[in-house]
Image (cartoon, rainbow, N blue to C red; front, side, top):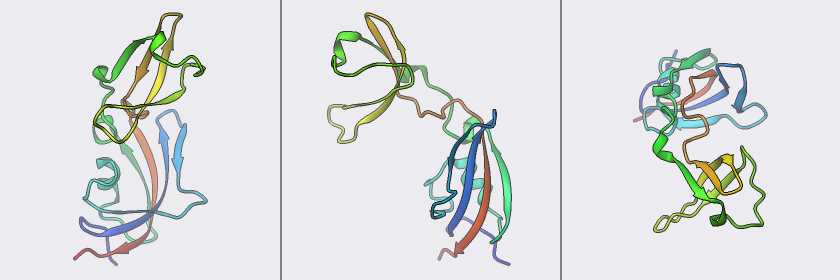
Amino acid sequence: MAQAKAGDTVQVHYTGRKTDGTVFDSSSGRSPLQFKVGSGMVIRGFDEGVKGMAIGEARTVHIPVEDAYGPSNQDMIFEFDRSMIPDDIELEVGLTLHMHQDGNPQDLPVVVRNVTATSVTLDANHPLAGEDLIFDIELVGINPGK
């Protein structure tokens, strides 16, 4: 029976959880996730977790921070003067905003971490940075690489 290896395009169903059991993403009710193994399309730990799986096989993969979204980077946390944020935006902790960067056509998603009368703290780290992750993965298809 064929097993997933680098270069293969695979289709998987998955559920991703934090170590406290909180589900942050799932393919349930959607088409399977498709990606090329070893191409960097998914986090390293997920990619490695699929290798060696056969169609129909399910496994649970525990992914440490280093193989997930990495540690939270303090250089990606910024404090701004409150007056720099438009008044029509109601700021609350946990709100995701999109910052425009000069010279970059894509906006950078940032999460509001703290709000005071005079300042706003924004975090540009991936929302799952600093987290160990757990994925339940079921391999549903393999298209062999060339």
